[in-house]
Image 1 (cartoon, rainbow, N blue to C red):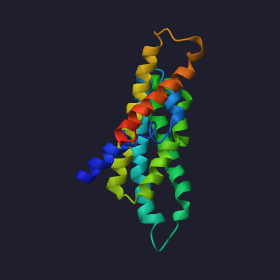
Image 2: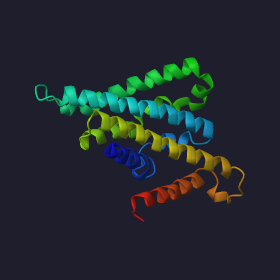
Image 3: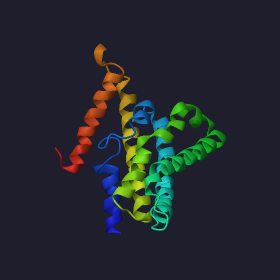
Image 4: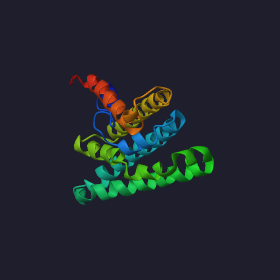
Length: 193
């Protein structure tokens, strides 16, 4: 149990996928304009990363790494196919049940398929030789860390709309500066600073 807690805290805060590993930056910058949209994207990413961690871990352990089959070289292709199928499921669900969120996420929802954070978690689970439970916990915690960072950024961006910012820092330059400062703050959790 202690080991799972260490994995969870490490994945969510210390090794935050966005602010420490710099994976998943496209949706981080693209969807972080409003807190509601960022939280919706975070929920979709939590579902996809958690489920993909579970499924890819099972497939890798019992199929690809099986000594009788020995097809570990196919892991990237198989992981991408699993992730794409899960994203399609999320997209269909949101389109049917949460039309407003589906519209606000726009093109960024199908881009979860190519979000390097989702594939990165599956590959990290294999590299660290996590079992199925550890992989699932790592995936869930990583997705929670993604959600924390994107919601924090959305909150900051909403507040920045009302600030008097110099002309050359308005828009995306200020967002990049804010992301850099957030990354420095999160590096403090790992003791690097």
